[in-house]
Amino acid sequence: MLKYKFSELVDIPKLQESMEYFHQTTGLANAVLDLEENVLVAAGWTDICTKFHRCNPLTLARCKESDAYIKSHLFKGEYAEYRCKNGLRDVAFPIIIEGEHSATFFFGQCFYEHDPPDLAYFRRQAEEAGFDSKEYLEAVGKVTIIPQERINGIIAYYKSIAGMLTDIGLTQKRQLEINKELVMYRDHLEEMVQKRTEELNEQKERAEAANRAKSIFLANMSHELRTPMNAILGFSQLMLRNSGLPSDQRLYLDHINHSGEHLLNLINDVLEMSKIEARQISLNVSAFDLHALFREVMVMFDSGCNQKGL
Image (cartoon, rainbow, N blue to C red; front, side, top):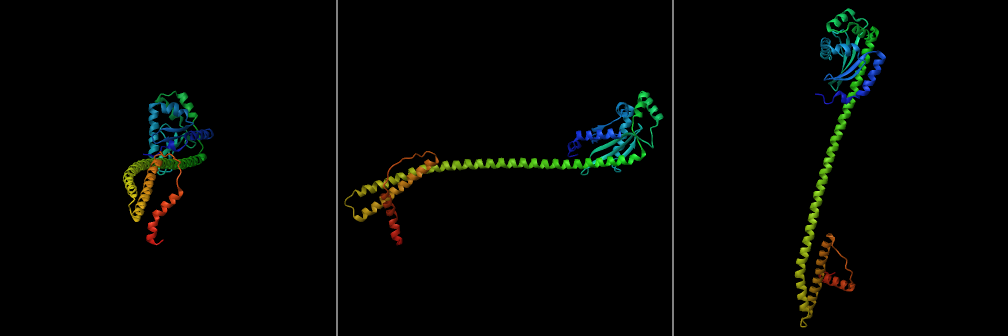
């Protein structure tokens, strides 16, 4: 089965126009038929065919016999030629596109000068088919007679036209295949983009869920850490109120108290960070003692620096 019909590969209206011009110049009838015997192009078909032969069961059967003969002999040479039992000449050229028979190009409904019409034969045919003899012979008289010296040139011309149609069809077929591939790639790309977008949305949702979980964890842990830290600070402050403490123990408690307060501030900062991520932070402006901050930092690092000899 053909992948593309001939009508999909060639601009039929333009081909019809071209064949009309050729008929006006030469007087020859021509046609292009697809593989289902549909007439895609027809120019200059004579009255003897359209008004007589194709309208009568007897002569129509002879036309179909001619069509069958041409079809069976189409590939026994570059073209098939036949004089049908209705007395007319037909010549057919196959249009082959990438090894596939896509359509058939005809010219005919004519006589050759060296084989002129036998009027006695046509009178008998008119009687057999029941045609009006006078009108039928007038139609016979309108049929083109091709001079002997022009036959080879006309056949060569039609061969070249068939070759041109083959090339045009091949070019269009490849273009259709390219377009089909582009559509396939575009659809695939859209599918990939959609899939990637879905993946990114899933990752975004997971990240947001993880972020929310982290914020909840930080808030909960800040509360859990602050509770024991407040206990440590409370007891160290109570112990500092004991006036009987030795000076070295008071110094140690002082370190514990300052370190605890610093750790509590860090815990509070972690809680504030979770509020920032939740867009719930509020700015509270307050004064602080810069010198005290430096002293606290010095106290925190003093022990470690002494141990390392810094």
